[in-house]
Figure 1 (cartoon, rainbow, N blue to C red):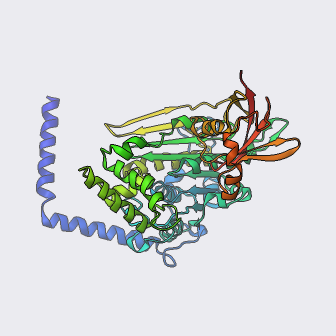
Figure 2 (tube, rainbow, N blue to C red; figure 1 turned 90 degrees about the vertical axis):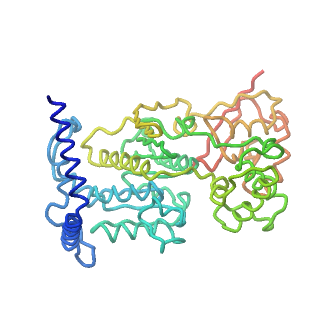
Figure 3 (cartoon, helix red, strand yellow; figure 1 turned 120 degrees about the vertical axis):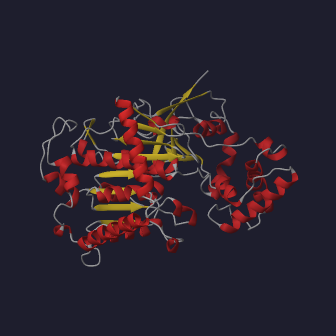
Length: 486
């Protein structure tokens, strides 16, 4: 009986929807009501051209936040005491740094501003490309070419009264410790593992210890979000207390590289043709002089695209497009707006939990996947005792005395737990600092290059010797202890 009754209701509802919603009078009436609601809301919010002082909030503006902060609930933190002070802290005191103003960053800025966070800084070194407009909703066609951070800040400031977003069109490496110390929480919406690791290292360097005991006041929580197509993750990092980025470096997907033999002699995919033009033809022909290939330069991409098409025609390969060329050169991973929205929501929720202490934060890693259905999973990532970033102990390097410096360099770049990009190796010999190899400065690289062919013994290194390694993945120098094996 129940099933028949429900079916009857379903059919009646479907009939009402099909007949009523197609009625022009009904549609016109609905549009008119919606237009009036928008006009009423706009009139209510429009003060001084859309900006409203933090002390002039209209009645009921933050009721949705007060419900979480001014009354107890079954999911609140055991030590939480409802009060009005938490909301005032969000509105007037709490400073948040958002790193990245792209797909995740736009969502994060919107979520945080609408949750009551008003003192927000955003850092992004990129400018707006037309391809960003399908998902980075704070940008418009007229903004193409402008800095993402500045446009995003202007949009939020003009749209959300009382919010003060400060943009920084710079690299994160351009700021010193004093800049990062001013924030209560830092949120990352980055597409670069190198940048994540650098930020992770910076926050670890800000920690202070007294007699070997970590000072809790020196901890700046890091909320990190990442997406890759229909997959994403969000995590909460308390530097010095929980697993850091480098503790779980193996979790990040390796960069896809094609075998050189396939690229050079047996291409089968359009990507092989693009890589051939990028890796082999560009350095050989030098179409723009000694300039390195710039993925953001349309002329460079066009040249690679033309050469790749010629290569594809030679081997009867189809599918080489300008967009694919740009994606391969810049290692672009297709972005999905809905994934960005889910991960940004999770990150913003964690910021709210930590800032208010009203709820227990995520412990400490959330995985999201909607490739086939919808799947989420939470687990606790564990700290590594010998983590190169947060363990505060020298890392062991085990090599025989006959090993060459080139082998050490390859270990630093290829080891899954290290994954360095351009390590510079120095040590102390006879009381003097000696650079064994440095590749970021051309003149020094040429001078130290012969050391790569020398054995560790020939370089004067001994068992127990400390090697200091600097790399773009961290603002700190990583210490390694050389242990000779038989």
